[in-house]
Length: 429
Image 1 (tube, rainbow, N blue to C red):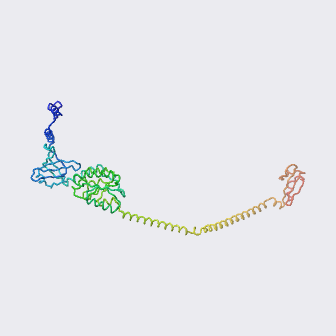
Image 2: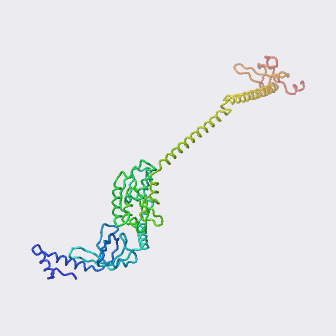
Image 3: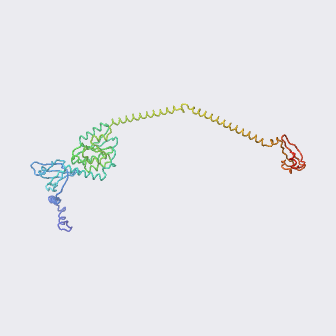
């Protein structure tokens, strides 16, 4: 229960500790020990980085480190606890410990006094990795749309791997064999154990910040599930996703892929495969260039030959071989058509001339000249000041009227003696 500000004991404690009344070291150490003792017993998970068991002693000293952070605790236990463990405990083992924190007042240090140690089995490690994989997948960190393409010919390649490791040797050897001019920025780090993740994070940050590095290879030559735990660390996976430089994961462990394979832009089966994926083969590329050049030259020659044959076919056509033959043929046709048109016109003219002649004959037969030639006459009365007009009735020719009588061979001037009855004239005729 918290004491109120008016608690006499608290007021006394505040007044008893000052520059004029400082606490002795033993009082502070005792109080710290009392405060830490109030924490009670706890379960702690970590990785053993140091085991110190001296013969004949009743206490074993260990260092328990956080795999994802540069933090550790001093642990003490009975040597029998280590010897009775069902799984041999060595440096690098992942364990869960149960104990109580204690403050050693003589040296002013804190240690965890454990009474139970459980080794984290492979099955449990894989289950934790699977849960983390599901979490990262749900956040979309495995999405293919986040994958960055690898440049065709990187000028500088960043390599994060163990010092003097087979993975480093394989990557450098294969890459230089494929493209001798390739350059590397190598960062040697621990690739297993408690210091692996912090060192790899630092190396990734340095290479990602270098603008001259075009791609980064994270390589290790395989190992057990426990050895590959750093490559399934959440902090490392998120750092890979956050990098702006393409990352190639080349862990070389086919059965159980670490999570770095899922978040990396490219997953390589082995470090050698990573070198082949990142660095093009100069010989193969030269062969490809030669093949493409030969194919293009062959295609060009084929095109020229096809066009030449097509041109030759065009030139061999009759219209080009004898260009005036078609004109001559059309000229003859035009002549034939003109002759036919002339004949048709002449035939039409002859027919029209014959029709006109027939009409003229008919007109002559029916005209007044022919009638006059048959003995008939045309009688006109002539009056001074008037045009002559044909007599159509005896009334039109009174006695003494001036007449003009036209016959076939000329005209006769006469005078009218008056009309004669029609009956008398008919009897004479």
